[in-house]
Image 1 (tube, rainbow, N blue to C red):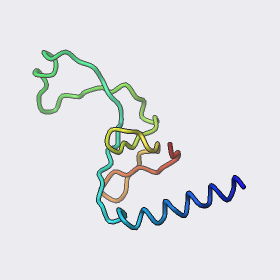
Image 2: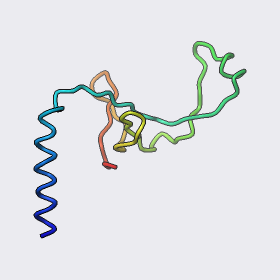
Image 3: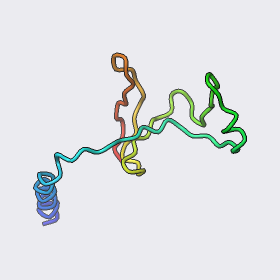
Length: 89
């Protein structure tokens, strides 16, 4: 009985996707963050380096409307950056 309810929900969600499947969304890849004073912020100039709170091998978080939806590993795709998804949230 519970399996049938889950399948009914999945079927319903698939129908609903037909209504919005063409809508474009924007994902943000969050690499890390840092805190600084406003004074430090205004002193930033070209070629300065801002150190983030993450290590080079830390997972990247994908955000949709500010909400985390996945994590993954940063990688090079030709001349661009990409994210290989390792976890769906």
